[in-house]
Image (cartoon, rainbow, N blue to C red; front, side):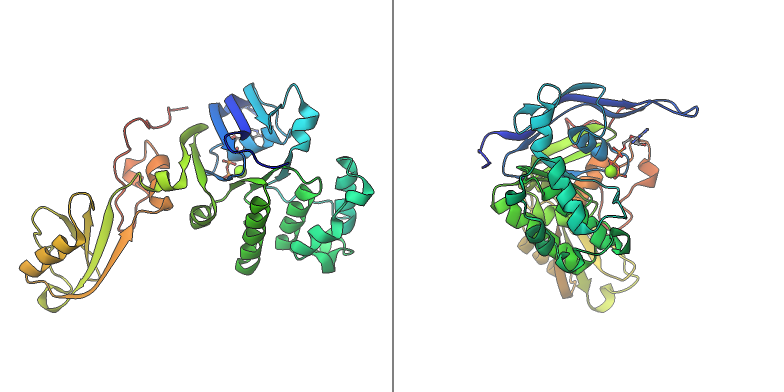
Length: 343
Ligand SMILES: Nc1ncnc2c1ncn2[C@@H]1O[C@H](COP(=O)(O)OP(=O)(O)OP(=O)(O)O)[C@@H](O)[C@H]1O
Ligand SMILES: [Mg+2]
């Protein structure tokens, strides 16, 4: 099935999930009626802090969790009206490493293919094991696989029925750097061949590198859902870090640079926060020179996904425990993105 531009691979409307509270616990509203659309052909990142509702969303699509209300469709198939086709259209790599220890990877894939009714001649067991670096483990018991290998086996299982949508819930947690790279190369390759990819990850640089569209969810609500480049432009501020020479070194007070925000780091570096729309880097350097500050070294930092993520998800009642413990300030929340309401 080839991706059609303009169509959605996943379309959720007013999707809500309330988990019944057990053992004296109150019910938990994990999804507060979210609208979320994943365009066909995209690599879509689903980001959010622990407990935001990412796995709940994915597990509803995978038919592992029953939604409370709302609708969802996968590749145009409504999960209530066409459950079989919806299930056939999606492969899900779950966050939990739930592997039957008594099957070998080869058997596990054959079994999965049987469950999905893939005819014997169309099965690609060895091919899938090969691309995931598990071909030499095809006949080993799953209980003898390492954690990273088990996760790759889960990816393999999600691919046996060749679904147009592949959802990976934290696929690289516990996977070493080399294999992570391999896994991402394979994800890219699948995407190039037309598979729509949805992934959650806590490695923001991974999402920044891989995804073309990103949704950030927080407390069961969608805080942002847009093209990655648009998302990254939300914070227009840059920072210039200057290592000054001479007397303006360690212990110096922040100089006055005509109203610019200047901080003096403990290591003696000056951190200047500015908006490129208001002032050019050249003008800042001129001001530094006018203030007789010798520049030994200079670097600039652009806002990255981590800044945007922190801005959109930081604890609403925790201004004192501001997550920006580094040198980067957390700008004010932009208009139109109010903090999630209290539970
Ligand atoms: N089976 C369950 N029963 C009760 N509450 C649950 C259940 N599963 C999840 N929750 C609650 O629902 C909320 C969302 O959880 P979910 O697992 O969807 O978050 P997540 O975004 O995937 O987090 P993480 O990044 O830690 O994987 C949390 O408050 C969690 O405690
Ligand atoms: Mg999760």
